[in-house]
Image 1 (spheres, helix red, strand yellow):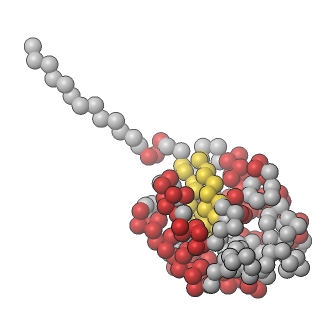
Image 2 (image 1 turned 90 degrees about the vertical axis):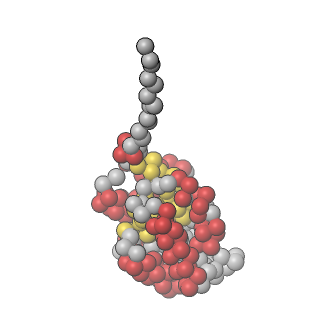
Image 3 (image 1 turned 180 degrees about the vertical axis):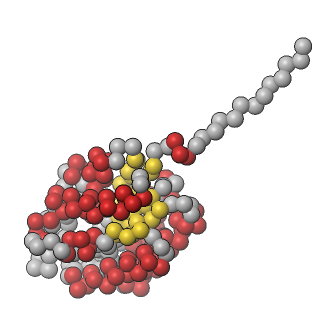
Length: 209
């Protein structure tokens, strides 16, 4: 009797995988100055148990360095959602971090376009950088310098039809900002990360992750 051997096909359905979110940014995303349990990654993980969060925040990064590591730290994960939070360093005056508003816009646009090219179904969340304490010298920036960078994020979000988490606006409405920032007047405190979480959660819930 002749024996027939049929090929076996393995079907992998994306829908059965955990949703994957890459948190892309600088020290505000990394969680500089707070315990890991208090940073944005862990706050989100505690809320969305079935979602995988990847923290691709790097201390001191501007959009120039972000663009250089974009393939390795974002695209290789084939994420369902990517958040962008840059601008605090790009707008800073010292330590060689300053990037012109023109370069800032071009870098963000290039990365958004690359995601759209590689994975048109990936959701993008643009995040405005939080306000700083103008009375502290350490941040090397001021809210007047930061404002046009926030405006650029809003404009790019509108132009490319992305989601927007307007964290700058969210924190600007708080009476005593110093409670939500560390002593350097720039990085988020534990309370600041709770507000970051609240702001971002409002957007993530509209995506139904």
